Length: 479
Ligand code: FAD
Ligand code: SF4
Ligand code: SF4
Image 1: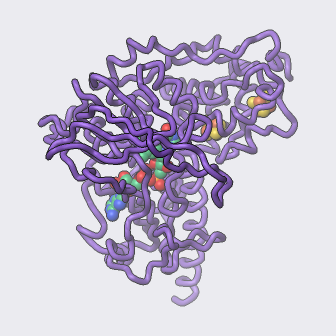
Image 2: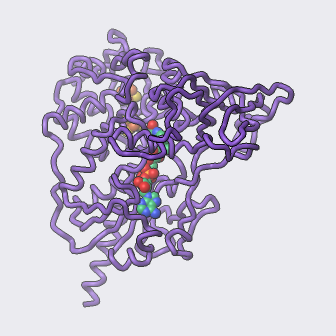
Image 3: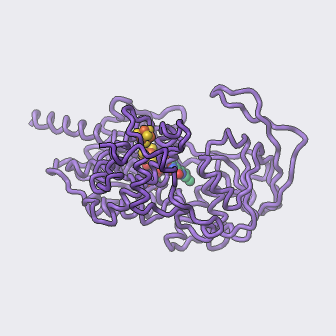
């Protein structure tokens, strides 16, 4: 059964070819090509079919990785797709944007043996893209209708995953989102060069065709409160993500031209859809011709610097207060950004922003790493006397996100939250302090990953199903 497998010594690791950096800076298309079938089969065949597959253990969805790799190596692509699809609602999206170097591939035994990990993410993407092209991705066929309805607040990966599974289980499902398009950060946060938008939209369209009702442009807190939604539905899922941008305390930070990362990325993604975006069209959120400074070292900062390159910035620098080895962003993304011409200024932090009125410069303090803090990471501290002034026409703050004040926004003071403002849930049921109101994704975990949002959406769908079945049973008894 392993005839096509265990090829990792003879077959070198080969990711799909990346387009040349100068070419990819010209557009917002994904940077890597896709495997052709022979390459996917060869690369899948490198897997050694571990008895205890660490790749699966470290995949938040516990995907059946060695099994679908074997099916791929044998050319049994439809079966590979069906198996991959059994544990994930969006395998082709995870294959594109999971930080595989920290998850499945980073824990592949072939990597530890020095031969280079099996290219799991690229094979996963290949399998499901092939399934879409061949019409193997089935429409949703709801089971027998259960006569109960679920309201989902938030159309990001957590909300969409729950919508998919609950609709399939026979519930009426309504998804409310304040944006005019569904997808959450998949649509308006993550740029097209990591995840092209038609890949997200075909998932949304499949849900719409399957009878999930979308209320786009509907903001809970503005258009109605949580209590009203509770009277409309038998269960509610809060999957609103985290959107309160962390601030930066430095003189001059209020200058024109100092902008929030998500405003910047959303505007760019909207332009990709062909929308009119006044704050982009008047130049405020457009990096073209500007000296751009991005502050932060996470995935959001990486997306900003690479977007600025594609918009035709005159120069792009990224300030991060720790060094390369201590940055939170994926090393792969840093490498991509460097190839595209981004300058990383490690151990640096903005001290002040020079105006007047409009940003013209940033004074940068040099940092050094001091003693480890409570988390064990060495805390950055200012290294006095080494300031540098840089010209800047656009500064993008990418310092991370916290939860919004949901109890206030939703008019629901009795909704329990943690001291970080995230939704407090019972870990055994994912239910909040309110009966029949569940929560999942970033609004529970804090800013995390798409694959964890999918996992949470999968888990919470199971809990909501159990809750609604129990409720229906007790209502039947009472009748
Ligand atoms: P979200 O995707 O944030 O969706 C929440 C939805 O709720 C949104 O559509 C929002 O409009 C809606 N909403 C919020 N409040 C309301 C309200 N009051 N009423 C109605 N609707 C509301 N993860 C990765 O794995 N790989 C990456 O490469 C990656 N890159 C990222 C890049 C950026 C710029 C950012 C910001 C994040 C990135 N992430 C990445 C993280 C990932 O996008 C999130 O962890 C994931 O999207 C969380 O999913 P979610 O469903 O919980 O929330
Ligand atoms: Fe790897 Fe992510 Fe796919 Fe899991 S979902 S196998 S972690 S790429
Ligand atoms: Fe295959 Fe690597 Fe997973 Fe082992 S850890 S089963 S070699 S992909």
